[in-house]
Amino acid sequence: MTDYIIEAFEGLGHLSVTSGAVLALFFGLAALIVFPRTILVVAAGASFGIGAAPIILVAGTTGGTLAFLLARHIASEWFRRKLEQRSRLEAIAEAVDKEGWRIVALMRLGAPVPSALQNYLFGLTKIHLVSFILATLVFSAPQVFLFTFLGATGRASLLDDKPVELTVVPIIVTVATIALISRRVQKLLRLRGRSDGPNKGCHSIR
Image (cartoon, rainbow, N blue to C red; front, side):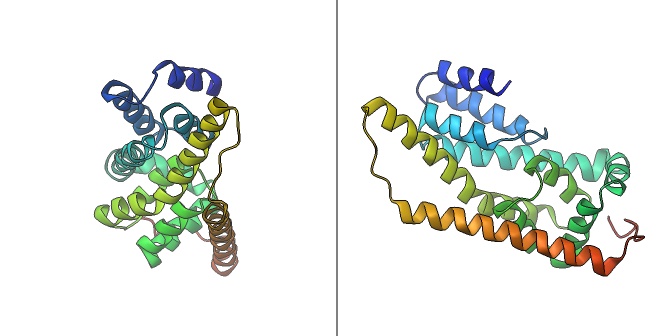
């Protein structure tokens, strides 16, 4: 399926109003489905260049907001039942209730769970919608721009038949930051899980 999507991106040609609309629709819908997006962001960068990054970011935030609202107002009971089966997600939800947008920011920067799953999960917490939108938009940006940039420069290297000189230090710093934050979030969840105990339910989720 991933190969088919990449071929579809390439078939759209250069970034235009039409291809930009298709790209926005795709990544908006992708925010509703638990599906690995990293390779697709790289593919979008290879097909359309760095100009695809703002489209991906805004579309992903819009789709994530729809998933958030779906979990909060339409199918909250169904999602809560699913949450009961996964203690790690329950720990994240409780952390958001206590820390607010800061946990959302950390999750967007270094996600230990897929971003689409996060969208639904955050809808079950008490975080304000505006805080969710802003944290998602701002703190999803580093990964989106990084992977789009890598796709774009990789394509340029192939087309020119020579290596492209990259500013390596910012890339290394970004990747290292994402990795460190991901480890920090996972450590936080492990500590919270031990402190809450194995029999804690999810009654605090709103």
